[in-house]
Image 1 (tube, each protein chain N blue to C red):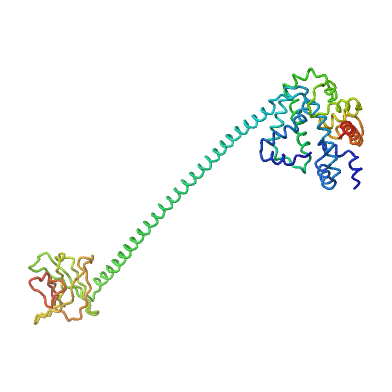
Image 2: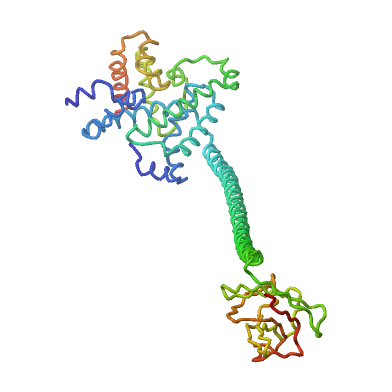
Length: 176
Length: 264
């Protein structure tokens, strides 16, 4: 849902609105950031930065430009990618073993109560390898269709439809 | 538009990802305004992506939001003083500028006043000088007139000799008979005491008959000490007496200062 009232309150610098937006989106931000950085301490720093940016730049959001979720997603990705250029990240990233979000989810046992953990687990078990890659690049990393098609060496027209199939499955499993 | 085909194309997923161009975004937004089923699909995609990304998040430390809050209030509390400082800066500059402007204006006004004063002074001086020039020109024309009289061969020159009252006193009469004018030069007479005035007489000797030519009321003021008086008489002598102000009907002979006869 697009939290229109909350967005307006946020744009009016209502701190309670920020708290509710935090409750709604902090896990998403953290998930996106963690998938890029794969380091909890660094990710928590970035999550803080992301919500400070959401607070400071709320006036730049307009519904005409896209979904509020998408706006937050962009801030989160950019902040995390910025962090990958930092010294701290380069030091910590030497031990990285996981490549995709799927690897994180496979190892994970503790989920927030908001998450349909059974559905998610079921989803990644049955997910095609190409779907894993497409979702990782397009959704988590913010690649464009063209960049994705080049990275995965698949036709440009296929990216969009393939992705559609991958997300359809997610909706089915989660019964959304 | 076939909205089902549109949804099936997979564009809405990319819309939620944020991987469309600005132009494509605007087009999708237009479609969403028209088709509720498209919005519903966007909501579903968003919800499933929230589940997926949320599932990735490690367990959050409880104090994470309070850290954000303190950062915000820190930024707010640091932002405000910086803003105030900047305001102060601009205020200072503003005040300084206005003060400078005021000083400038004041000095200009002051300069202006000084210049006006100067102009007024100069005007007064100019008027004085003009007056002086007028006086000088007048003097000059008078002197020229006198000079022309003195040089005129047709004029009778009658020196008036000192009398008992004042042995140093002397005067002269230049008589232009033709024009019936007598020029009285009294440069050799002392300044009359207050309340007294010199009176000039034309005299007939046989019998002695004095006729007044007039009083020299402006004796002190007249620098040339030459007075022009009408003299239509057939004068045989001229005399000057000191008389009470306003003159007398007949000369007070005790106060006869100078006397001279016409020798023609």
